[in-house]
Image 1 (tube, rainbow, N blue to C red):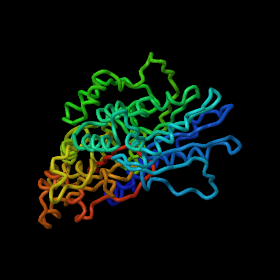
Image 2: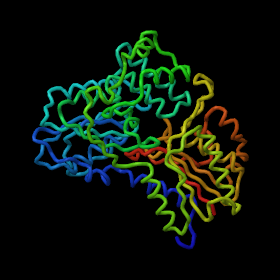
Image 3: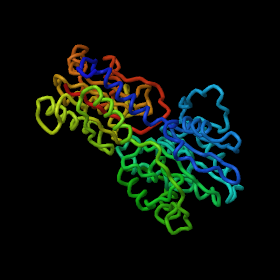
Image 4: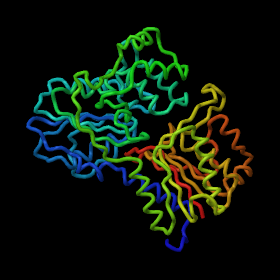
Length: 435
């Protein structure tokens, strides 16, 4: 491929696959596993990578050492079990991104499993993105229906992941460090896969095993900023500090946390593949946030400059970025044709509109868990002829953006990226190829 005689879209697919492979739990777990304890080892966890993380521990943990536990993952995100691998950790599936009764029941069971632990026991916590919704135990005064509504409102509000998880931590009986507190006096070791900008363990899955630096006042301010209603009882509890999360100095014993996979590592893996293909590779950042469509416009400006031989990026090149953008839902969910799509699709739609058919530029954006929002696609592709093909079908990009319908735009073009669940999650992956 050093002569650049390759299919642009095939190469972009290879870059995405390289990023996903780098983040798979089995490749990254062994170096972070602690020594088996005197007592028993209990595995607890939640996240889109939960099933794969549990299988990695089962494959690596000594067969003569006791191992049991419970991990929650998203529906259809449990990987096929390898032949000959004994099942020692129960994996339960529940809903994401809006919690459901299955997640609530599993979370209650998980908290019950922490009872009776001793200082000779080890709790191995497996945490990955998506755990905030999967690990749901509403705070006093909240029902599951309340949490579902608040979660939907947060998802549609345009709040970033740090803001959303601040609220989630304070409205929970298990997140924001509370799971680790329930495990005392056992040792708690957390293995986590980061899906958040900055790789802050207290934000990943709302930090169930990490002490929290945000406050009730912060959570209340976020709810007010995005005009998300809560009951007078919950508002009063936040105002009084009754729902405060564990803090340093509040009998908190810091426990080890190991990041076993990060967005930056996945972007670098993709960059290596690009360089092996004879391309220059540039990693913008793994912490990019903001409205997806606006981030798409910025990436389009960089690609257009590179295509014209301007700017800091020398073509032929690949421009890579990660992070977690947001989508503010503008169309009513009750409209006759509500939009479908997620962050990656909306990024691609904004990108295509801003590129205006720029020759020599192709792109792929996808969520590394294989699911963009709540649809069946991981993301979408953009090519120099995307707008021309859309115009031939009578489709106006601006109309699809107005109703947040990236899925509806890219599906008839055949440009959806569909991978199925990948069993990991280091969040957004974006690659622009400039030839």
